[in-house]
Amino acid sequence: MGRHGHPHPHDRDHGGRGDFGVRRPLRFLAHELGLDEKQVAAFAKLLDDLKIERAQAEVDDRRALSDYAEALAGAEFDAARAASAGDRRVSSATQLRDVLVRSLGQIHALLSPEQRERLAYLIRTGVLAV
Image 1: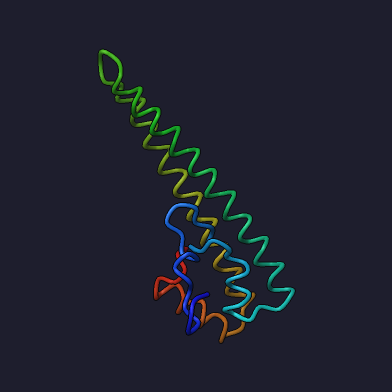
Image 2: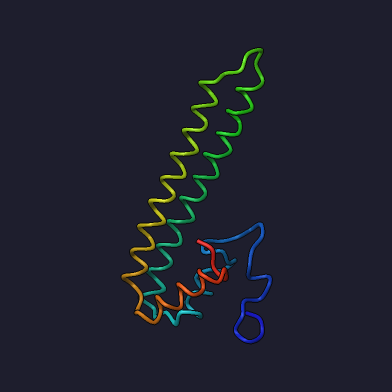
């Protein structure tokens, strides 16, 4: 954290970003929201689940890009392969969205009204990215 309670520029990530848009999201959230031990444990699981889903989405995206390249590489354009790659991307994005929505619902239930308001503010102002 930088001065005046604002995130330090290095806490924001522009390459090695963690879940919720900061390098150490659990520590950041625990501090910013005043989480108790039970809340920290629940957040740890939720963040881990999101991390796994995002990693899978990245793998799916790399496979789709490879399939797009292969669709272009042949003597004739392979429209079916390109469409399949697009479908993979859509499916992966849908899965990630579903996990994020489910996680946000669990987070809502976990937090007090004041903590929810603070988290919403952090997301709204761009301090955290979901």
